Amino acid sequence: MLCFELRFPARRYHATPWSTHVNEGQIEWPPSPWRLTRALLAVGFTRLGWEHPPESAQRLFSKMAERPPRYALPPTALGHSRHYMPIGEKTTKVIDAFAYVGDAPLHVLYEGEFDEEERSLAGELIAHLPYLGRAESWVMGRLVEEEEVPSRDAFECCPLDEEEYFSNLDRIELLAPEPPSRFEQWRALEIEAQLDRLLSEKIAAAEAKGKKPPSKLSKKDITSVEARYPASWLEALTWDTATLQELGWNAPPGSVWMMYRAPEDARPRVEVGGRGVPGPVHNIDTALFALSADAIRSDLYPPMRDALRRMELIHRSLVSLSDPEKKGAGSPALSGKIDGEPMTGHRHAFMIPLALGRRKDRIDHLLVYARMGFDANARRALGLIRKTYAKDMPDLYITLAGLGQRKDFEELVPDVGQATRWRSRTPFVPPRFLRPQGKNSLRGQIEAELKERGIEGLESILIELDGGEYIGIDEYDRSMRLTPRFRHFRREREKEGATIRKPALSLELRFREPVRGPIALGYACHFGLGVFEPVFR
Image (cartoon, rainbow, N blue to C red):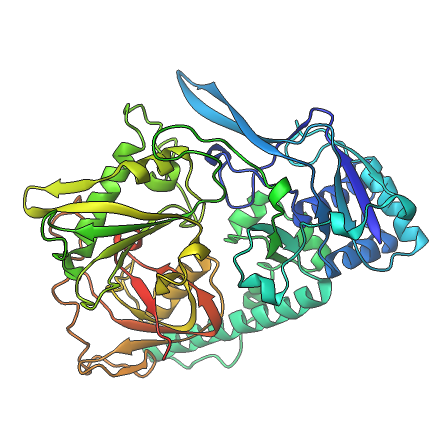
């Protein structure tokens, strides 16, 4: 085994989790296996003078990836400071979030068999590690001798097993490197699939122009596809953010998200003041509201066809309530913007209209889900909202029914459960003009939307015809009549006004393995369109 002991001389740990912006105030704690592995690899290049990792280093990192580490966490508290940094003639607010860890050490345990050469190299690498996370996270590391390793019970922060994965345990999501063997297999399958798709597109394009279709791809095409993937597992660990963005990756190739158990006594805590959000709050990402269009007749609900307009009004109210002084300090989790710039990755709030009662054409509840979690301003807004109104629509009364983590609502709301089949509750409106082939085809746009949300394993896409029958999109042709059930749904956001009528499609998505909701895709997916509901029968 290997056990690393890490102490932070400044008593603070600064690190922004993957896929989040520094001004979201999120903290990656404990340090992810991906971060620690890359840091040790960097030490080899910068401190030990490697031009290429030696064989012993390749064996060491490979073994570390085979079994994700366990953590013994010190008591931790969250905090942040705010600075107004000059940019040109203006200033912009920068949030510096950190975990206060005090003087107690963090222990990281890698189980498995390591020979003496690998242990010696691991000790040298960890001893030369100057910081972990951002540069101000100074660190002093050492390899713990086997007789000094804390008992296994101390390493409570560990990967969830299959039974625990679907339990109500509090959890932490950490990025980890895939084992090299799995990476090589994944890379080969991905390249093969991309080459097949590219050849199919070239054949279809040639046939459309009446030309002879190609029988194979050129060497240039093959090289272009292969260049999008790291040549080796170690190369994947060395790719920087600029390379990933240039090649269109929304997560590092060769990485995998892992769920870890979060021990109660070591979980980061933050005290949140203000009305409606007392006490410690941990990873709050979901809110459930009960709706009524009449305070006296509480059984009068707005129609589902008005979902877009209703969700826009509620969203506007929440954003306003999160910034009561109108100083531009509203919640990014609600507005989807940081310093006025739109966020990427669809991590901010989705407004999911629900029909939990007998009438499936009426909105009786609302689910607000933000993958990035709700900050203090967002939670305050969620607790304050009571009513929305518009000149041409009945008032809508809103009551907060629950605030917590997504898993807390599984028994009440099917949308946060898992299923292999998901059908449209509100129309899917393609975000871009549909093309017959390529990335702007219906399949291409849906696959891109799912990839942005980290949802994998799409097996097939079906489209609903008039009469309720679903057929594969490859079987559909324009002579077939699509279902008219979404013809009266509003499909344009209020700020756009009357535009070209957008298509409203009813789809079924089928996955190889169960995926967890909520799922909302396409145009206006954060405002009630493109919502899919699970099919369990």
